[in-house]
Amino acid sequence: MGFQMAIEYNPQLARKLGNVHTAVELENLNSFYRQKLFDIEKQIALYQLKVNDLQISNQKLSVLATPPIIQKDKPKTPSVGGPFISPTRSDKNPSLMNALQDSLQDMKRNNEYLNKLSEHWVSYVSWLEASPTGMPLQDRISISSGYGKRLDPFINTWSEHLGVDFQAPLGTPIVSAGVGRVSKAFRDPVYGNLLAIDHRDGIQTRYAHASELLVAEGQEVRRGQLVARVGSTGRATGPHLHYEVLKDGRLIDPAQILVGQFVGQ
Image (cartoon, rainbow, N blue to C red):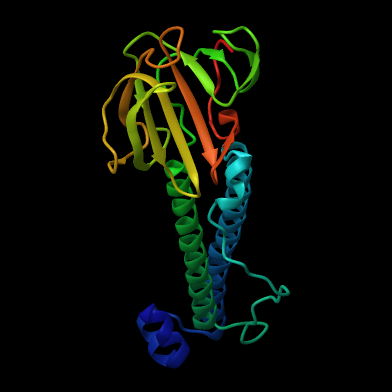
């Protein structure tokens, strides 16, 4: 770089140091470095295209991986806009130093953009991990009763079932579907041993009929943490987890928020 600065500001010294004797040799040297800079800028442009493709892929992935019920709560990307204006150059045939400076500025802008993009996706992943989208059982999932109308197993008449029943052996680990705080942990005559966990964005999950509760009210829990074990306490015909999800105080179908495949439904 020092040699190139000498070419710009003291051609006589540059010719002496670099054994460059004629104007043609000097122009050939400049052309060589211009070609190198052109190659660098070309690679930067290709890299930018790849970054754009990656962003589009991430957006498609977020649509597939984020349940519709919580789509509106996800972190937003910064709002930007305006017409496209090609960056201005000092002249049509820039000097080597100007070309180098322009390339460095372009790389700096690209790095700033990548940093913002990275910060957004780190924030998005953290938000998604904290949301209660995980399955409450980590073993094989078997649904014995879904959300909606069903024949009541005790009196054999139609009733509303406002949760999902996961059939599992007695003592099967029950885990928190997401990061949250335990708001209820007590014995209920209908739900049996009942656990309620408050999550972000107005979502609460409930875990009923447990044989034992392993966390207490007020305790902070992480996603996938063991919080209870499957039982048949309360109004139950056998060992299973009755799982409910509330959004802003309203019971919703847990299938709207769970990311996973129900086996044996």
